[in-house]
Image 1 (cartoon, rainbow, N blue to C red):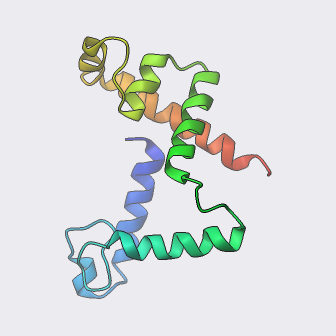
Image 2: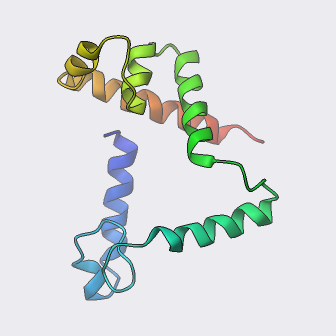
Image 3: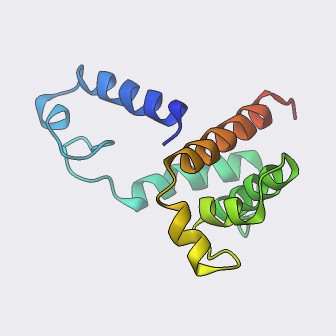
Length: 127
């Protein structure tokens, strides 16, 4: 887990402290108003509205496009193909590489931190 993600999760925990008890004590990180798991449909409704207001075509698949962008930026910034494959959950050239990468905490931390740096750089750039 990157340091930024850890920070975001801590912030979410603090935000929940000001919520009703049912949300504050929920087992979910981002609970719905009654403390239950948020349903995908509630997110999709908002995402579609934003997409339509922004004039983005319906066939645009943000999750896949984001994965492709992150992967290409990581590779451009010096990450190895095996590192990127691991980060995205794909099998690298050898199944054994992935198996051993899971046990190298420093490799996992390096990949997570590099991903965060690349995302930060993308967000700093003006459109």
